[in-house]
Image 1: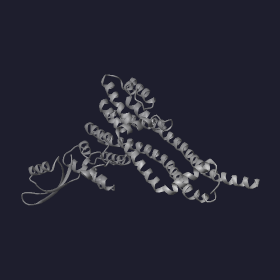
Image 2: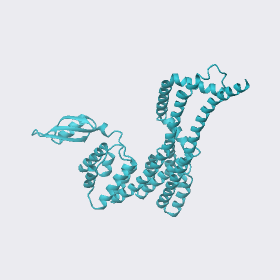
Image 3: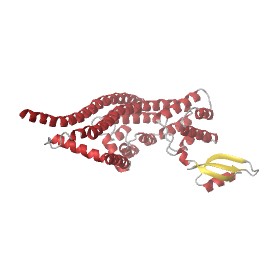
Image 4: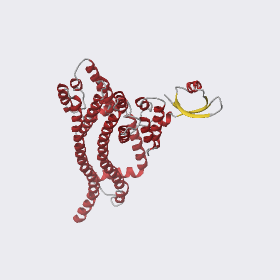
Amino acid sequence: MPRYKYRAVTLDGASRKGQQEATTVSQLSSALRESGLFLLDCETLEDEQAGLRLKSQELADFCRQLGAMLSSGITLIRAMQIIAQRDAKPRVKKCYARLVEDLKRGHSLYDAMRRQGKAFAPLLVNMMRAGEDSGGLDTTANKMAQTYEKQHRIDAKLRSASIYPIVLLVMIVLVVVIMFTFVLPQFMGVFKNMALPLPTQAMMAVSDFLVHNLMTVAAAAVVAAAGVVLVFKQPGPRWALDRAKVRLPVVGKLLRTVYTARFARTLASLYASGIPMMQALSIARTTMVNSYLERQFDEVLQELGNGSPLSQALKPVDGFDQKLYSTILIGEESGRLEHMLDSVADQFDYEAEVATQRLAGLMEPAMIIILAVIVAGVIISVLLPVLQMYQEAEGM
């Protein structure tokens, strides 16, 4: 529902400003009239909050501050006012300010967070609702701070592991462009009217093409990259890509570990808060960020609804580590499902960190070898005619 920023007047002519949600401007005008206000003008704030989605580190900071202040006896509204006044990005500050306004109007924290669009993750919104219902909002906030800190740490390691290969890839592209557009053309005059070896002919043909069509090739590469991004945003291709991710030889194992850890920790948090298992699974599926995994949960929910135990319902899911099912089975049999889920999440977090470091260690030499092969290929293609000229000169 759009939120409007309005300017109105009272019967006495006093000016009033504020914000309010309404389906249309007419509905806003009617709602204000019931409060004794007459609408002068308004503008929608829908675009202001559209697209805002707090990152894991921002959610961790929010939960940590909120939990600490609530544990100290500070009221919820006052705690949110303090959070909203602290240094933050402008859009995040506005989000917190809207949250404070909704709390002042009498909305619960859960409802106020839900009204901020996609700013707060569904997991956090539902956990706060459970915390309010149980009277342990401070405990819930502190627990979610730990959850998002762990998630941020894993995500940060994945990003850092990908930086070096990306840098090397850019270097490879630059080296190829320099070698084929500046270095090789210097030898074209020397090798003119010579019977060149096949590798040298191929290199020279590529060099000549790039020299005359470099901008066209660059533009085509940009268009192709944009096209690939647009294609994989569509449901069908995205599902196929997400399916391929979990089946890759090395990277797939790392992603399965990350997905399993995230799912186990999310489910443990929801289950411990008293949220029914069916609803907990529906929320946990949204944290996967993988459409292939998400779609499989339709069958999981159906199996669970038919009376199957959780371990059996999850077993056919393709994309989780097999250790998850046996751990859940032990938790069901021992009556300690929450503890087992937390334990297995910690194990997978550690395994994800180790796998990330190992993957980075494998990718770095692989990219260096690719760069070395390209440079060596160019050098060899140049040296072959030189060697041929030297042999011909010796034979004369």
